[in-house]
Length: 472
Image 1 (tube, one colour):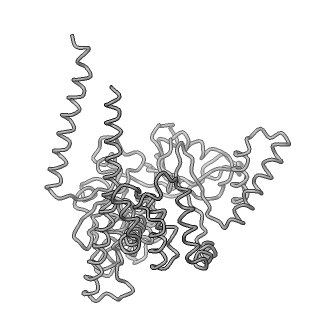
Image 2: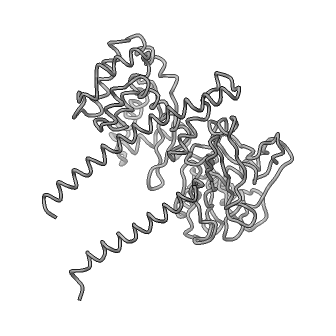
Image 3: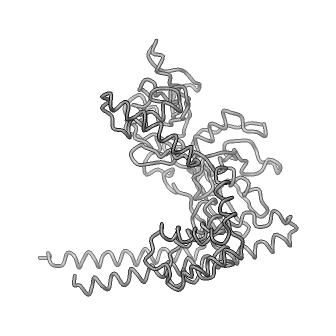
């Protein structure tokens, strides 16, 4: 490939980046227009003023294949850009800023009044190239400095109120690891880190072969749980098949919040003294719970709760209740089936057990009419214009896994299918539609088929050119 070809490729990459920024700006304008339209329609329908706009962010999120929580943030970003920061929006439209850097400017001016935010936007004038070549840290510093000059009291109050956002979160990392993150006031965070470092340095000086980081991590677990190695007596709901547990089968297991884990790792964590989680697995024995482990081994404290699945499809056996609230056993059953929030693109932890067809209109308290949702998605679903019902596709009687169809106030439909449980056979109907999918218009389906056809032709052309020099 010649130098001219390389230059052409770089030029095209830059052009595409500019177009991505311009499209992000267009999405922002459309999001604001949609929000205004929805608010007018909700107001005409008699919805109270303080509830106007509820569910708008969730609809935008579904359209952008994002979680509802991120949809609300994207809508807030769009409103700030369109109504208060015209220079930043212009820079985004022309490719001088990308969406992430525009987000940083909006975030750092969030505490200001509309007038002051406009003033900072004009002072920095991103559309005039004042931030060209500036890194993220320098951009944030410039925005903070300009904001503090205009309203030091608001910036100070924002810092004082930030402590109310303190929290601890968990997210998966590769190779059966995870990130346990704590957002803390700086004094508390520094104190925790200093205590862990001090103990690690002391143990290292005494000959401990572990690295400082390993000692700090182990020390953190022990201090929080009160147990060396950490999790004895705490139920973590590891889901696996009886074949994986007892026969050494290679079928992966599933850990709620985290996701899929290797079967060998699951057996090891169960058998490790002092680190024995509670397990659930599709089995063939009588239902119930019983302790497992060698007699007299107090550290081995594993409990097995068996769940039955249909052969091949992986569909859990039905359970039901005549009560309005989901009883504990049925709740655990649905949580094991759904793993995370069932709203498409949302993978937040389950906080509420929801009736898909509401109780007040005759919805039953059954596993088929139950779904695990996060708190925000449950509240959104209850607003005017949203509908949900068990899907007529996968998950219907004789179909595969449990499925839900969610319809938004604009009439767009999205389908959510429960994730496959360990033991589901590859290639069976249950492995289809693993991810939530949008119910597309027939024209869009034809368009996607045409794109796939063109992609296949392009692939064949590339292969023929690559193999031509080696042809006989």
